[in-house]
Image (cartoon, rainbow, N blue to C red; front, side, top):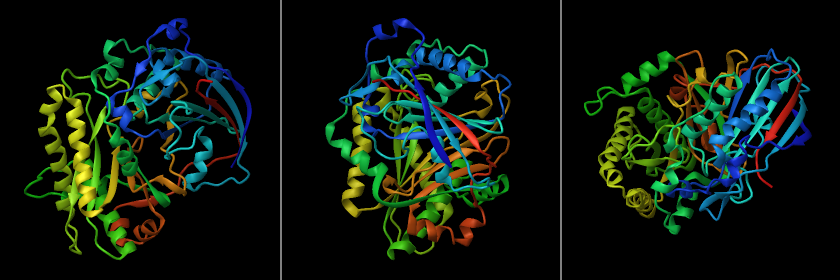
Length: 448
């Protein structure tokens, strides 16, 4: 795929009073997260309106009025400043070869930013949008949100608002608590910054593959994950446990020894805080639940791992009283002290699972161009020092299947790809859309 930028222009929030608003303060949770981009790519058929780009730019300006912190940059890991200038870049590209399947990394050329790797905090935009228009008339909207301020729920709220404005509906979110996170949460202890970067990123060569679990596979895994301690496992618990099990087995085969393993799961804090915050509240309003598997036995039982994943969430919920008392700093300090203790004792291998299940309703990502025909989360590059040992779960539109985007070190991934038990439930896939030659438009949103 060949991509070339052909023009740029500025996109700003449409409200002139935006610059009068006070700087948005980062919360403790935002400060903990290293700046890196998480992408989403939405594919649509040909829009009926030949001037759709003009309307989309106007909708973007309206959406940025209420999500105005996304138009700035981070200052000293404390606050967001400078809300005005934006850059729009039109990108032209062609696909010389018409192929029905493509490697995941080729999709990254549709994205405006380097994804899943640490980027400079003060010089990187918080949001970037790239519009790709193919010769056949189909388009792809590629969204990159910096995890410094944008978690999955924030991204979902922003995209839904943008889509609503574009189809002619009211995308306004009138809730006054939308921007409250920074004022509710304490600043970060500085010694945790390097720890969190080590949990998310690790030096090495990594490979990303996509796997699909159909509804029958999910039902079978839920049955296998049952135990006396977990009589009704959810699909998330079953899938997370299954991915953790086989990643752990592959890792042990790759390194030739049995290491303890720690699974981290992101838990949404919005509804757990007191008073609670709405789902469209901006920021990284989540914390991590840790599950530790110390057994060196060759056979790893799925139901045991499923119980551990669920137990970690229950323990997390039992500690919510700290949140309800308003002491978020103590709550987060306890979480990361727990991680420090685990790391110092046994140098375990971390595996991270993020779920978009029940987070992004694709029916609400309606730009007025017809039904969504495809969705991709992009993937980390096969590169040194990238997003390490992780899986991202996402629902596949118009089906009961679930996609898992899995990133492991290359040797471990090669072994996983030969695991017959794993492949009996997880179907490896390349991106299923057939592309023809295309022209690509991009909007990069950032201040100068």
